Length: 419
Image 1 (cartoon, rainbow, N blue to C red):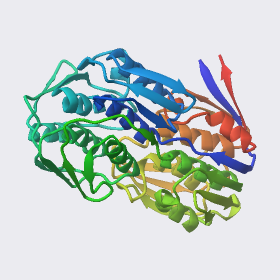
Image 2: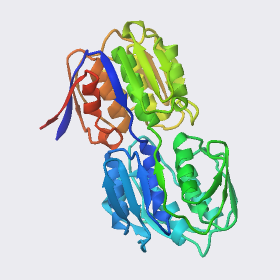
Image 3: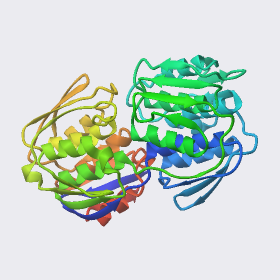
Image 4: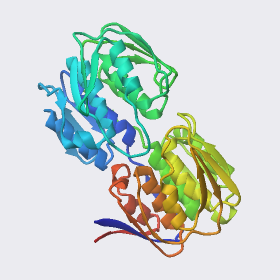
């Protein structure tokens, strides 16, 4: 079993290049199976386990993929299977995008219900509401979701809650529906906009992505295109927070600074210097001068829930009391027990965590309870006195390409060890 071994205490210096966005890539790849003619060339795909899992799923239903580094060429013009039921499908949450993509193209889909990180209930009710409004009959049976329609007809759909997954999934299906679909109370995250831009590049007619209302005029077919995935907002935020916690000066390259504004604002509030350039940020920090702050996670452009766990580590060494209100997921504080092993002072009450800053953390044997918790444990190990061993690191590789290499290049003492 692999473990990450970290000897903490080193300041971070240098440059780190951010990879393509995980949450965009795992939706754009399923969107590519909707192409009726031509090949889709997708650049800046991150080298992570979730993407590799999705590759195998697409190939299992009949798609063809060629890779050249971070550039993927997808040929899905042949007849694809509308049933996705492999073990890979059950392993990853983003496989539910196959429902919207296959339903849009073939008016039929059956997909095993997915897994992913155990951070709370991820209901499909808003996805189903959208598919049914478009004219599909949807059933849930024996751990799978099936959707069928004679044809899909555009509709006005108001989501009861803001959901990234439902927004993207229904947008996929509506792209090839007849007439206009209006989606209201939609997610505004950068990766929602990226998927819409990808679909438009393939010939879709989608307007309003990034606002509360998306309007989709259905088209008869989509064609191949060349497209580059946006940089990963969450990976960038993780390296920003790591630099703030460790101290030093790091340039975060290949990002869209506007996407980072909620994180930058909180770091500045805590005493971190954030300098904005065209496509990069420079983070300069002295951990001795960190002060507490409060955050409440919320949909974009609010503070992202995926950055809450790494942020909690920074708060654990800031002077004063910090409070986190987690408004998105009900089980996103599992990492706090691991953080306590390292000396953090944390009280969790429901969806609220109260953190009293301590002068230092100490190395310990901890585990990555989920993807973003794993990133938090890496940051904790980087700032702790002594050695930290992190187990269950397969979670980390679902979303962070070459994490140990990137931190090593910044001066961290980190390596993978096989037991």
